[in-house]
Image (cartoon, rainbow, N blue to C red; front, side, top):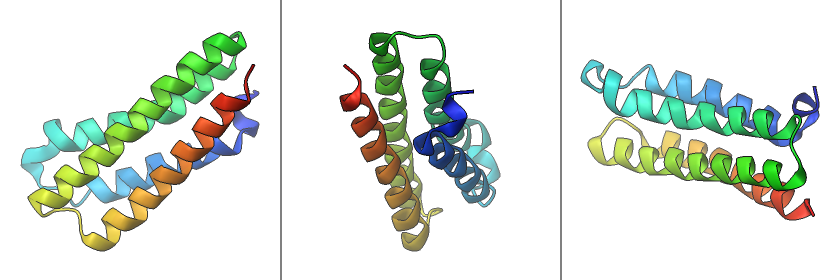
Length: 115
């Protein structure tokens, strides 16, 4: 598949694994709140890149990349909330923030390259 060759998709897949590990330490009462939200947002980045890359026009792919970007912003917002609530450490916050920021930059670049 085309999306499997995209380095941005591969990095997004790595992010889903990192978010999964990070949320294992979240309190149980957050299971259906922040835990679910940040996991869905991270998964959405990879899923939208994959879906948009297959059988879409460039305009359609750009639209899906826009969804992926918004999901990345949502991951960052969830990180802020988790840090504020005291269950995302500064170290984890910085690391996952930077990982997400790199994916966002790559997604913006890919989106800009489509005519």
